[in-house]
Image (tube, rainbow, N blue to C red):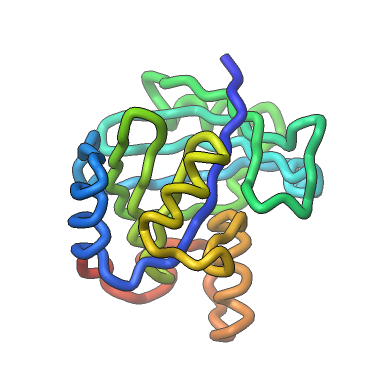
Length: 195
């Protein structure tokens, strides 16, 4: 089943302080800190990237999740919140799904890793993502909830981003001159980030 995902990202300076504040705001941890590895598949000419779509296989702890995301029909590139149509399902064997994609002409195009901790309140989610290029969080839920929660967390509107991890990685590469092709802890050559 497809849903419209609405989210923003922001950089995290102090993970422990953010987690404490989420507790004060009534969030409950729904998934403890778990390693996640994502493989994006695309055609050799990067057709999905050109369409701003993704085909992803995610290994999250012991779970495999297959996801397709694309722009909604009413996409507004100037919107303050990121909107994507997301179709997602759990699969038994992500490596087998990847082999099927390869046989159909798709290839692994980008790999990214992170340590994710998930929190939720009655309306939305806040996930904490420790990546090789920094600590980020995402607020996901209705636009009004996102805006209200950003204020309650003391975030400036200018600190909220709609960029994907792929786009953040491209910016990081431009800033650092890194030759890395994937956003993985091994490729970046840095230890897993500390909390």
